[in-house]
Length: 251
Image 1 (tube, helix red, strand yellow):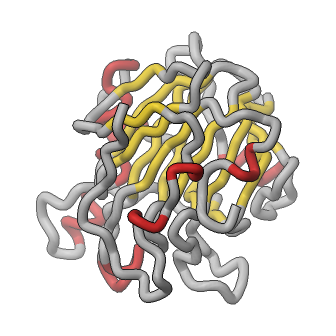
Image 2 (image 1 turned 180 degrees about the vertical axis):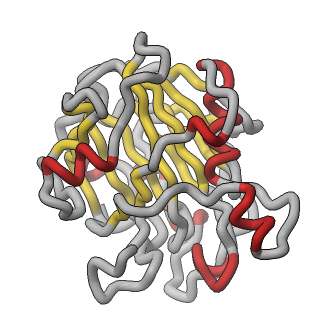
């Protein structure tokens, strides 16, 4: 299937753009465009790349032992990420509080695990080109924008509940605290607030059968997300051997 590339490329000023990401960045992948809200069951026999449009979300299922990547296509784009253990009716989920406990509050690094509210490991980080992520802030939510005088603005909490509606989620009040991928708060390093570059990625291995939700963060106030929201990609079924030559510029 021909890839459906995102539109509205940001000029990053460093010469990178979506057209500069080679096909080898997505090896032997099946490509799909998304019409959010979307729920996707991925075929992990071949890597599958799914584009999440700017300011929208995606739900997707991953089997235990499968690797998947979250890829920033244009740079400076935060992704709110959440996950639930299948068969638990959304009761067992990726917990930032439990993960902070196990990691003594430090942001996770390659080889470390993220934990559920049932004190079980749910994900392992196997590759990471940015190494800066946030575990403290909630997803942006509708009232946040309303209090700022902005009505009708999309939010990560809204994106996640849209994507997770087929799994029984009813309200943004049900959204769990996310793992904020590529977000440098509370300023873990001297890097920018959103330090990722075009093609940067984080790769996980699922340790349980899970359903995940990813939101291409719509927060565009005060220069966050580079001041312009752009598309991101989810790649499921990344091979364990030789995957460092897979997705992403600089891999």
